[in-house]
Amino acid sequence: MGPTQRIAVTGSTGALGALVARDLAQRGISQRLLVRTPSKAPDLPQAEVRQFDYADQASSREALDGVEVLFMVYAPEGPRRLDLHRSFIDAAKDAGVKHVVYTSFAAAAPDAQFALAREHHVTEQYLKDSGLRWTFLRDSFYQDLMPHLAGPDGIIRGPAGEGRFVPVARADVARAAAAVLAAPAEHASATYELTGPQSLDMADVARILSEAGGQRIVFHNETIEEAYASRAAFGAPVWQLGAWVSTYTAIASNAMSKVSNHVEIITGTPPISLEEYLRTAG
Image (tube, rainbow, N blue to C red):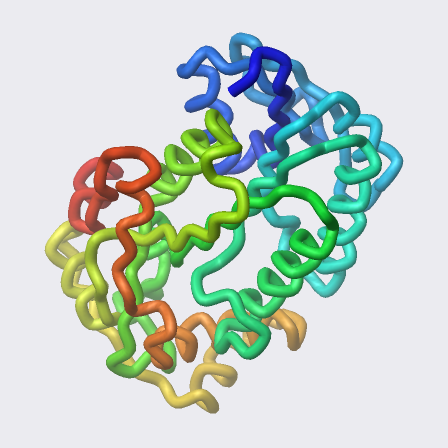
């Protein structure tokens, strides 16, 4: 990394971005933290804080002035997410950013079963067409979310069938991201599939959660109709219901079933398993 290179990190007040920012700080790398609420930004050495908002292109452009490498955590879920991504990428280009490291999603494709993975594909394509250098970190579902899948009755409900996926610890994604940001030229035009070490189905997840937590967790394979009906009581908008249900149908499709070694290739250390994550989180 050249001595004049400037790194900006979005999402440092959130779970993933905060881990990335702390990792960069531990490496002694200076960075700019882009946040909506400066008072919530982590207090880190060699870090300056700038206010920005995905919805405000002018503030984004100003906050990115002088930045060369940008870690772009995706905008919050919602019907305007793609518009926000396009606007922010345009602001980055106008500000002179050279390289964007984007947190995408596993199996991102125009016809992805998971609804939000289709949005990530569109964002990837927009970045490719922008002329900026890019690196895509396609994260699988986070191991961190697995303990929250079961309801109060200990049942994980969803139309996942016997489909398999490879959940990854958020911390492993963060250290991979920090390694890429520390040496971006080595990872230009690379698409990384960031997974854990085990391909699991939902019955496996239920078993592992049971063994780790002492509470019996089971998986109930809903039909798609049952899945929409069981979630209707939350009063969520149609797009969000579709995202929730397609989480499980994407697993059922086996589109995310392949174990990748990209975390180890990037960082030199293999990712942790769901069992290991639950032991350390507990």
